[in-house]
Length: 448
Image (cartoon, rainbow, N blue to C red; front, side, top):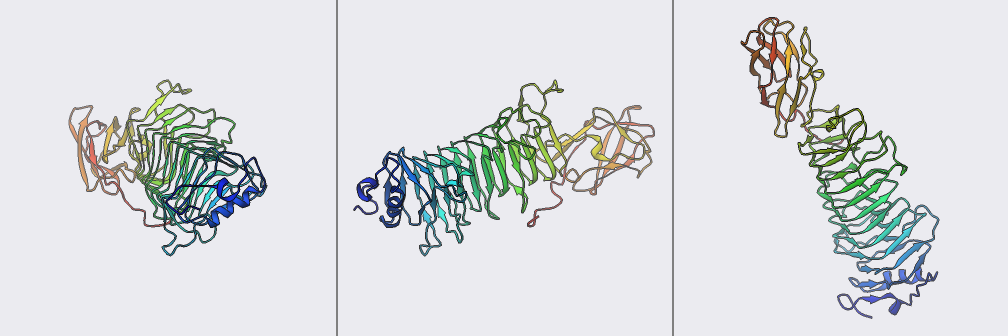
């Protein structure tokens, strides 16, 4: 038998595997996993193979399945096709560059086709590569677990059931895959503090949305094509992308240059941010759907909606087909706010075209007019919401429409908008008013 680093080991030649759906092959493949030299490459020649319980790889080696389908006949919903559970090597299970390539693993009645470090006391695996396969699991195609599992690459696969990053760690890359099924295409539930997962250039057609982030930070979701077909399990809890933040705020997510396809499911937004802060949404193509494109819930803070997002198609009741955003959050940039956000008082109102917004640099801009109520010096007109307030008390000058004189309002650090020198029965034009805001009033200091 060859040793690690020499000629790959053909399992038919060295372990008597038969193929042709022989029921005895599962035990022989497991024997190869248990006894072949550490670091070798096992080759499963193209043929048909049956398993009735999971295969388990506990030792460091590579697996080349060529074009072989492995079909599980197990009816146990907890069973996987292939489990990678590397034993402790004395270095905290730090196994690097383990490769699983080619082949097909089909688990129609179990959990996942490939499950990595999901059993009790999971070890870590660095730089695991799963490439060029076709895999199907009843719950998902691939699960990565283990808090020391990091820098994995899932590339150029066809995956039915999606990918779950469930308790793993930093720096995973999911690229150039075709992903489809009823559940979420990619579910991300990283350990606390994990960062920099990249999801790019995938085609995702999934009833449960393309990306569902429970926990994690600094996730780059770029250049993906997304569809949510009607009848594929979509419901009011699913969006194309959903940032939940179940333990802490989801932060540092970049949703950039994706193509969001149209869907007949009209209850859900393309992007739904529940508990997320300082995420970026820009340069995406949104095909119209109702009621909104981006939904920012009350737990969303200081996110940035860029100016390069595009909307395509015709939205019912909206001949201009503008990007539709609902914002119940705090300090989000790139979202137009109406006069209702100011809580105008003391007889003051606003023109129908009145709006204000914060740009991506933190500068607040106003458009339209405030129409006079009580103008006595010191009278409060309204209150700027958190995230739109100046760093210091700020006097601002503007034209008073009726007499063409200059009026002054004072914007206070607590958000109060107060009359300074304002003529009575006035109408104030705020088109020239802009200022740098205090970007954040608070920071994420730990779990929610």
